[in-house]
Amino acid sequence: MTTKIDYIKNIKLKIDNQRMSVLVGAGFSKNVSPIFPSWWQLLYDMTLYLYKAEIDEAYEDTLSKLTAGSVLDTTKFYENKVGYYITKIGYLDIVSEFIARKGYQEAISAYIEEKTPKIIRSGKSRFLVNSITGVENRVVLTDAMLALHRSLLYLPWNNIYTTNYDEMLEEAYDATTMKIIEKEIRVIQAEIENLLEEQKAATEEIGRKSIIKRLEDKERDYSLLLSALTECLSVVTDSSQLGLKRNKNIIKLHGTIRKKEDAYGFDGDNRKQYVIAREDYESYPAKHEAFTQLMRISLLQESYCLIGFSGVDTNFIGWIKWVRDIVERGKGAKPTADYKIYFIDVSLNPNPLDADKELFFENHRVLQLQIMEGAIIDFLEAETSTVVVDRNAPREVLGLFFKYLAKSTPISLPNAAIEVIHQNKYRKLWDKLDLLPTSKADVKDIFKIVKDIAKLKSHNRIPSVHFAYANNKIKLLAWAGVFIEGAAQDEAVLKDVLKSIFIALSDTFLTFRFSLEKATEDSIYANLPDDRELRLCFDFFKLRECTLAVNRTSFESLHEAIRAKLINGGEDALTYESILYSAFSFDFRTLKEQLSDWRPTFPLASEKSRITVFFPRRGSNSAGQ
Image 1 (cartoon, one colour):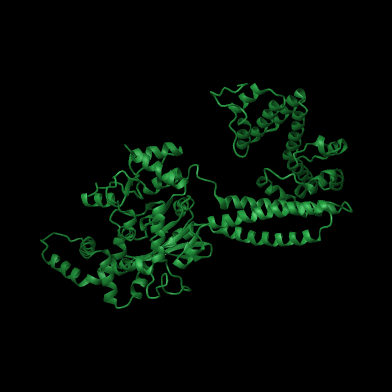
Image 2 (spheres, helix red, strand yellow):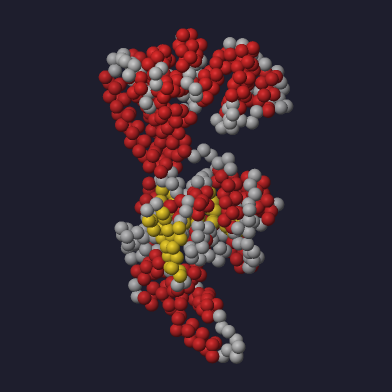
């Protein structure tokens, strides 16, 4: 029997396999602030406008019949009466009646724009502003308030659909990555054009080979950046924008809050800004066919996760009608057939489904998952090693749910592209080093960019040793003695020179012994300033030489000396050197024990994986186990 936990696992599996989109409803915006209206709150002032005379008359009649000493709660009375009319007339028909009473469509647009919180910027601050049920609201909008929206956005959904008019999804999304990628694409295009010109003019074979290598790498990076750009989220407010890319969109199905500079209208309909009245829902498949067809096609290939809706939500019911022929069970289909729609319910004390609603859900392959249940929270906490502070807080439990869905998700292509951008910058900085000084005064100018190189070093963990990229580093090592001498009188410049030498050694996978003359090595040691980081760096290079020479006595002596100098951090790097020594000395028993006890953090965790793979798994019959 399939359990609710199995269905939670199935949602994650579908997300990881790119077979899931999400539909976000109005309830999700309440996680930002309670000033975001529910359907009832949105319609309150409208209903009061339509039926004020009847409600006032009923109030006076009730007041006249009060017995002596009785008190009538005015606020409660009006709320109950408004609720009565909303229930009697229906959400959508109330709106249609309001438009008919006003006589023009713009009335409902202005009404929605007054009730939906808008973002107002003042200096560096952001405020949410709206007017609802007679109350004027102005709330400071912080990044923390958008945290749940960000958690949802960065899950690998195929598309994010929303019926919300507000801009919380757009505001939570950081478009900086997309802008950086677009800028870098233009930079690489120009670099490719320049390299092609250099290739035409090149006369020496080694120069041509270097250019060809750079061209190959630039074209590869260009292709990756283009792919990454398609993985960045784009906001779609008009169906004409759907042709730009199939997935990774935030699609505003019912319109979006209009800004002053925006033209009036939604998706080609210049007479209507928002989908809200009954006639809007009924004409939607015809008027907004592209949106409808996209959802229908998607449902054939994937599933949908619904968040921020209630089981009686008008948007929810309306959406189901648009795609009903896709989700309805065919004749003879088993109730256990794969669900197409996962309705995430965060009700604290949900009532059991009525027989008609249960049948509706079953016929339309909708699975209701009440994630506020103790057993589901227990599972999510165990899977994420997280304990929620308040199990009755939907915002906390949704955050836990998103954390579980984000666990072990595929690598983000835009983030990988940012790494490529950093690597390109790193290579270009090395290319900018003019390593042919004519005087000692030149040294300071040559190494003024070393701080930028050092910052980007972490993004170049596996550097290329191809001549096209290693040439300047090899030059630096060849001229190291000259640069050290030129910087000897200026400690700040000397530090930059030594840092660049150590980075060049690391990138070329060399040590002092294999790249520097003994006199230069002695000069480095003699000129080391009183800088703990530089001295440790020097010691680690010397330790690596002991490993390559398999000199146990020198290794153990220097190893202990380094350990004594470590204060905060560095233990993983020191353990890694011990592991390498065991490997180079063919002491595989000790090596296996060291790997078993080692719990490194990134990036050395990947080094552990690379070494561990050479050992047979338990139960293997391989020799040497």
